[in-house]
Length: 257
Image (cartoon, rainbow, N blue to C red):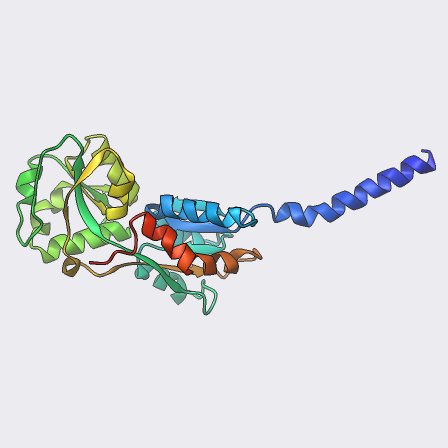
């Protein structure tokens, strides 16, 4: 091969070698986020990308499922949970980076019906939920493991109606799956977060659960011990900054009652 071609090939190899680390960083940090954060976290990732950073990669599911993924060794960078319990679970197993856990936002719990429904219920102690359901099902996230389901079961228990509806629960894998059941008319009523109802054009809010009927709905965020992405901590700080919190407020989060 002529010397001039050898020099050109060598220069090309050097250029490609130098580009490899940059290419590896084109993707932003991997964020495991509660299903209810879908719109707000997507907005936050877009805002971060507009600042010139690689766009974070978002994975949404029930907090319980995500926590177990992290426990199983998923090579993710951040975890945003819909409750403190699943964050406590990972912290207890030393799977969080020390000093990075912070409060991200808050939410409210509501009862929704399909948009055409004219049902009205005032959510008070012993309200007639079982009668309103009749022979049909109450859609809610799995009350045994998923935060939205846990909050819902706690609220219904404190209000004295859980026993009457426990056998009518259609337990979904996450809160968005519960919302979908109501949207499709597969369930006449569902328990979801206020932000889920706000994100849907196919349901209406029948009532808001009293804040005293369940534990405060808080969303913590933290770096996972497996995090190796150089942008992960900076994105975490952005999420909990005034600018980041404003994004969540626009999606209906952070309005405690």
